[in-house]
Length: 193
Image 1: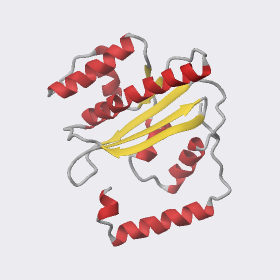
Image 2: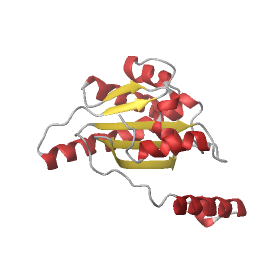
Image 3: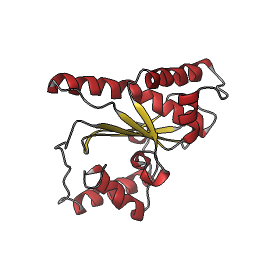
Image 4: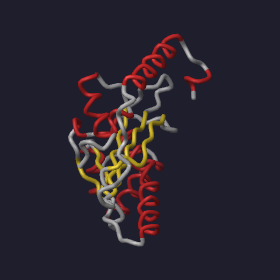
């Protein structure tokens, strides 16, 4: 919203670049037909890119290879490390993922597989699977334990993905053309697991 109320000349250039991209890709289509009921989420964070030092969260969710949800948002709290920003990103969207899985199971009257969350931060995966570590505030400890509890109860799985496979990466920062084209193809449903 800050760009809408206080747009700069640079923002205007970016908007025209985006409009040019949209005009040049009219023939591209988004696959909306899922191949199965497998729910997969990619959740990523970029540490402190905003002027107020807040981090940025990117989320991409697929159902059976079809894109069903994307988000790119500034985090509401300030974090002191990339690990903290990844933890905040992860826990902000766990509830949505669980609710989405319940909704799909309800409307299809079919059991669905346990949702899988891909995370590129091994330190966050260690925090939420083994616990421990240094958690500097109560709200971060609560986030860590919320995630740990969900894993222990089998409500979702968290798997590691190396940075090049992190589809949500394009939601947290600008990508070079060589990285953007594969990113776009994955979002459109051309190359997703």
